[in-house]
Amino acid sequence: MSAPSLTAIPVASRIQGFSYAIRNIVAEARKVEATGTRVRYLNIGDPIPFGFSTPAHLVEAVARAMRDGHNGYTASPGIAEAREIVAADFAARGVPVDADRVLLTSGTSEGIELALGALADEGDEVLVPTPTYPLYTAVLAKLRAKTVYYRTDPEHGWQPDLDDLRRLVGPRTRALVVIDPNNPTGAVYPDDTRRALIDLAETHGFPILADEVYGDLHYGGPVAPMASLAPDAAIISFSSLSKAYLAPGWRAGWLAVGRTPRLDGVLAGIKKLADGRLCSPGPMQYAIAAALSGPRDHQVAFRAELKARADLTTARLNAVPGMSCVAPRAAFYAMPRVMLPPGRTDEEFVLGLLRATGVLCVYGSGFGTDPAAGFFRVVFLASLDELGAIYDAMADFTAQFLRA
Ligand SMILES: Cc1ncc(COP(=O)(O)O)c(C=O)c1O
Image (cartoon, rainbow, N blue to C red; front, side, top):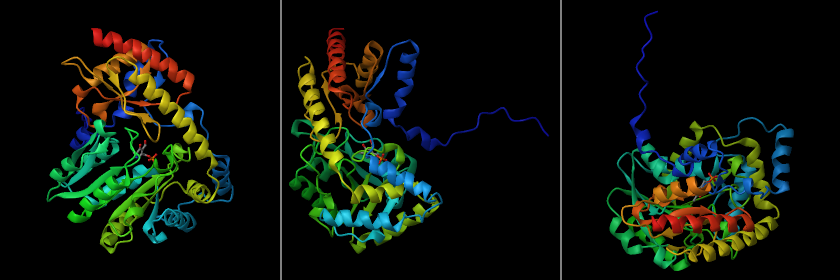
């Protein structure tokens, strides 16, 4: 054998554009932990480490599926029983959709990846809100497609800026991403805004990718799917058991492709891509059927817990001099803003906070906002007492940071 090469193995250039700040920032937290400081992880939207539990009947459905021997591959779009129950759930929420247009996916994330993969070629454009959930930009970078950010406006409760959006539509626009209820802002869009978004997409002939993973976590009760406003519009909806059913590690999600024949080709493309990844986790598909056909009282309790935390977060952060926070109306995120001194960035603020207090948030620029604008995201799943202590530490640090 000739001498082995010592040259480093090259990495695909696409990886440079792939970034997911919510998890990338953990490397910094580990360094702080290594110095003996306790880190409080407010970076990931996972209710389980904060003491919330997956409903017992869902755990039982998965255990039963495993015991009954459902441990093989399933059909690529998922088991028929769960697809039918997802379709029935959409119908009950005002979206008539055939089970054949429903696919079970490894979380909302895989649904998003499959849909973008079926829609966007290299150089195509997809309209994505800013701030955004960063998976969209990461997947688009992988596809060598272009993220075109449209503004959502903190002065108007983080609603989409429709004029900005209209200006950004171009010949290569392939889809409009709508995250409602929203991560990272906690915003919920009124029906007239949702209708205006649908009108815009329909006029130009591109689909809406409706990320509805927080649809059941609006504090006032479930939000109807966007497609219920226009069942014949080209809308693909995504959701999962991760948030409203408290089972993020199961990777159990679904997508539903609107009934318009204009989406038939995209549906076929999604199914083709789904064949290549075999199937989503099999036993967890049985929990989807149990979740959507069983009791949902855990959601009533969870929404009340979240609302109390949202109220505390809004009150405490708005009381910090130099800070402001739009009240979240759903989910477990807030996107406060600190008035940074000239030349400072959101990342410096967040890393400073981490090093000084052990509190880990994510800087707004990880969600696409301007680094100088001073936004950062807080996950408020900790108990009220712990959040109180966290906001005390945040207030002290902010006073020092703004003085320096
Ligand atoms: C807006 C949004 N979409 C999708 C996801 C991914 O969810 P899943 O666990 O269903 O893949 C998240 C997770 O935080 C999210 O906030």
